[in-house]
Image (cartoon, rainbow over all chains, first blue to last red; front, top):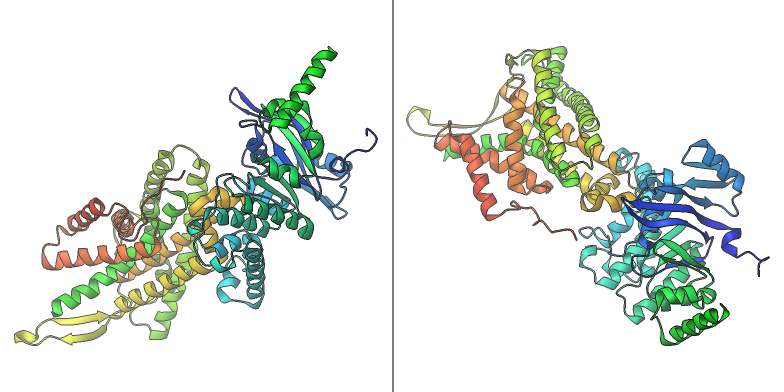
Length: 312
Length: 311
C-alpha cells in the first residue's frame, strides 16, 4: 500500500499546503495540507464548525489566508520546478510548456475565477435574484463577452465578432440550462425559481465560467432524495464529459460515499483523515468525530476503540 | 391654456437636465450604495469645459446652421470625454481607497471632493459668473393665443428641442446599454451582489469606475445643455442642480434608472409650474416639499423597489 501513492498525490489539480486561517484569537483552519486530484470528485467533510467553508473561502479568494500556500495547476502533471519558480518570483501565476500554475493566496477573487478558473457555489444560494436564469449564466461569461464587445463599443455597434461571441455565450447557457432541466424557465427571474432549481442553476452558472475546478458548498442541502440523486448524476456528468475536477463540502453522507473518489475529513480546523471513501468510512477517528452517523458505524467505532484500549 | 402649454415645455426642458444628472446619482448608489455628492460639481465642471470649447471654436449665433450643429456635437463629445476623466479620477482618488471603510467615510469624502472641485474652478476660472452669448436662437411658434394684445404665444425654441431630443436619445441609448450589453449586465450583477460577481470573474473595481465614467459623461451633456440654455454659469451651479437632481433620483426611487428619469422630469415640472402659477421665490421649497410628501407615503420612491434585507 505504501508504494502506490494515490492518484491525487501524483496528479493534483489543487494543492493546499500548511494553510492557516486565523480570525483574531480563533484559529479556524490550522496547518491543513491536502491534494485534490485532477478529474476526481473530492469531498471535504467534517462536523459543523470544522472549518470546511473557511477552506473554500481561502481557495476562492473570499478570505486571504493567514499563512500557507494554495497551488492551482492547469495541464497534466505540472512539475514542481514550475511551482517553485513561481513561488520565488513573487508573481501570481506562471505558464510554461502548456502548463500553468497559480498561487491562489496571492490572487484577487476575480482573478482566481478568471485566470485560475476556480468556480464555486454557496451554501446559502447566491444567485442574482433580479436577473433572469439566462442572464445569470451570461454574467459568468462576462470576461469573454466584454473582450469580444471591445469594452462595449463593438457591442453597441453589433459588430460580427461580438454577435458571434454573444451567440456562443447564449448557446453555452442554453446547453447548461438543458442539462439542469431549466430551459423552460430561462427568462424567469432567478429569485422566482423553486429552491432545488436555484441550486441547480447555481451549479450551471459556475460551469458557464469554464472552471478547471468546481467547488460546491453543500450542494445537496435541502434537496429531497430524488433531487439528491439527480445531483449525483449531474456531478458525475460534469466530471466525465467536461473533465472538471470537483471539490465539495457535504453533510449528506449518501452523496459523499456514493460519488466521491477521495474524502478529506476536518475537525476543529485540523485534518483527521484523508483517503478513499471506503478507508475514511472505517477510520475510527472519523467515526469518533462524527459519532451518530449510523448505528452500525457507531458500533464499529466502539469496537475499534475497545480493541485499541485493549492494545494499550 | 397657452400659458400652461408654455410652462409644460419649459418644465420638460428643465426636467431633462435634472434627469441626466440624476442618472449619475442613481447608478452610483445602485452599485456601491453611496451618494456621490460631488456629482453636481462634475456637472459644473462639464459646463465649464463646454464653455471653454465654445469660446475656442468661436461659434456665435451668426455662424451658419451646419457649423453650429457640428460645433455643438463636437463640444458635447469633448465635454463628455474630459468630464468622464474627472469623474473617473475622483472615484479613483477619493472613493476607491475608502471602499470597505465605515459607511460614512465615502459620504464625507464626497462632500470634500465637492468643495475641492468648486474651489478649484473658483480659483482657476474666477468667482464671477461667465456669460455666453446665445448661440442657438429662434424657435417655432406652436400656438398664437387670440384676444386683445395678441395674447400669449406658445413657443418651442430650437434649444429646447435640442435638449429634449438629446435627452430622450441618450436615455434610450443608456437604458439599452444597461439592458443588453455585457457591461450593463455586469453593472446589474454588481448591484445585486458585488462579491458574487467578483467570484464569477467580473472585475468589480473596473465596473464601478466605468459607472462613474458613464455618470460623468451624462452630467457633461447636462452641463453643456445648461450652459447653452441659460447662457450663464459660475462655479456654484453644481450645488443646487446637484441637490435637485439628487432629489429627483430619490423621488423616482434611488437605484432605479427609469425612476431617475421620471423623477427628473417631475422635479422640473413641479418647479416650473410652481414658479409659473404661484411664486418664483418658493419654487425650491415646492420641489423639496413634494419630495418630503412622496417619501412619507412611498419611502422607496415612485419606481424604487422596497429595500429587502439581505440575509
